[in-house]
Length: 113
Length: 114
Image 1 (tube, rainbow over the protein chains, first blue to last red):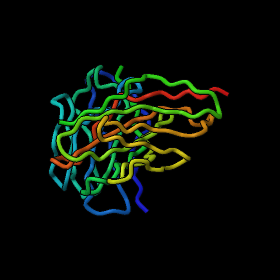
Image 2 (cartoon, rainbow over the protein chains, first blue to last red):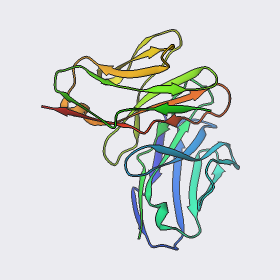
Image 3 (tube, chains in turn red, cyan):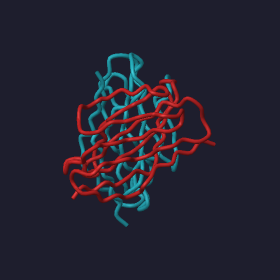
Image 4 (tube, rainbow over the protein chains, first blue to last red):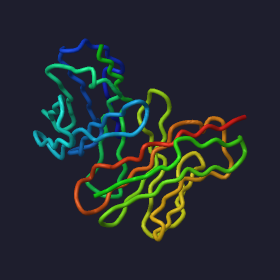
């Protein structure tokens, strides 16, 4: 069966520090991968998605970047965090078919102080 | 363009009563609709999806959803609510005109009172 791992679960970082959040998927090949951010326990905003190694699409211009160095690894990064980067970050994977759901990791709670 | 509306921030229901969480959508092509549940500080858990041709689809934990094409709605229902159903519920949509990412509604908090 497929599983998705996301870490760390919580992170407190000072303003101006770098960020690296990692997500890995097991049990499937060539998944579509996604980073979403959830602010204040409500709606999800799509940040990045990837259909293959090295292929990243950015949905919202901001202080973050994403990379996919391996087929089942997706990394969210920032060189210098802002207070507004605080939130709950969720990684998800999905297949290429339209009627397939996305499957989410347990998320990372990021607090920028 | 895709969009989802969940008009109720919160729904309150007594345990044992039926519940409905509303969702309407807008897409350019054919809709692919999903419901998710989220418990505190956890990721989203898939509940059910629309299956083309089925106006009533059944999912996990006794939940079901009613699809209405003319009203562009996909309401989540359960015949008898449990206290443990209290959580945040999200409706999501994609269409078949482009990317596979899901567009989510703003979420509805379901509170089931004992």
